[in-house]
Image 1 (cartoon, helix red, strand yellow):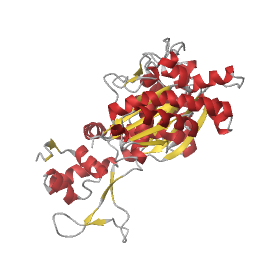
Image 2 (image 1 turned 90 degrees about the vertical axis):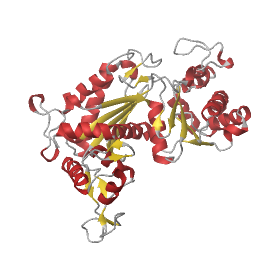
Image 3 (image 1 turned 180 degrees about the vertical axis):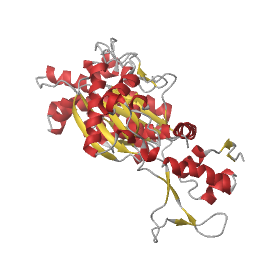
Image 4 (image 1 turned 120 degrees about the horizontal axis):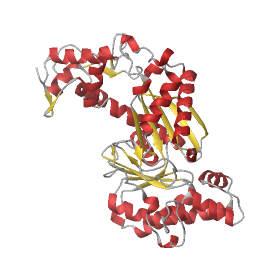
Length: 426
């Protein structure tokens, strides 16, 4: 029997989505939401149970399952839950001079993580190969089987074509333009985690393993993933959310109605290359003069500090000076915030977000003060009446959590879930 939920075919993937979203968490509620018969719901749930993706609630007082009232009447129904213990996700966030890697559960909690130097200018072959090594170390540290990894997420400091996973003309990633990041990262993971003779490790509960060489890899801009992670974790009810990352460069991520807005080819949010009058004589890493990043990024502030006799080479150096209360750093950071605030007045007027989050190395009180000064001065009161200007909640983990969340939402979306169930043979 073909059932429909909101006019859509209700397969096992649709039922999983209803359970994960909390819209229907019992068999009776699923029948009511989809119009499917009890037998059909049972058959489709059986596929999810065999895959290890669903479980019956374990929180009930009897230990035999959490009970919930049935919308169809009769005995209390057993509550259904997404089984977040059946797999894990690997994630990495690249900066210009270091990288963070993490092993995450399917609900976003970090199981193990590592942070250390890694220069993006060393090129994709070297950098992605090293990520493969670090991923394998995380799995060993957490005592997790490589076969339990369902996907990999990667955040990079450049514009990404989401269809191909390749960066497009990235100003601060020399040698990465058009490179097959997905393919190289799969190979790096496979080289470090494959069994004897390169064979995949057996899958969970007798199900076939996907194999490290075929692991799904999702790549996105770091500001996009930071915005996605922060919005999902701290502002899930905000339908228009914007995050601005100010570190070595400047970029923005926008989440609208729970989804990352990327534009036509991944170029949305690249505000660091908007021209500003104050930067007319400043050369940007992109090769143009007058970009916002040339006068207000961590690199630009570091350059000004060095010229003033305070050595600094990057946004991270500026952050350390700000934390130490260096007066020159405080003054330059506030001035940089004013430049960014002037641009953000236009961004806020265009997007009308409920939350504007400032993140990155410069996201402290001096910079935020400068942003607010110009933003509220230049933007119309109507645009800022319901606006919250805040700093990061997740800190340096934001991109990792965003990358992990993006992988999970992709792999367990209804259509993709159906494809994966078919591949598993259930």
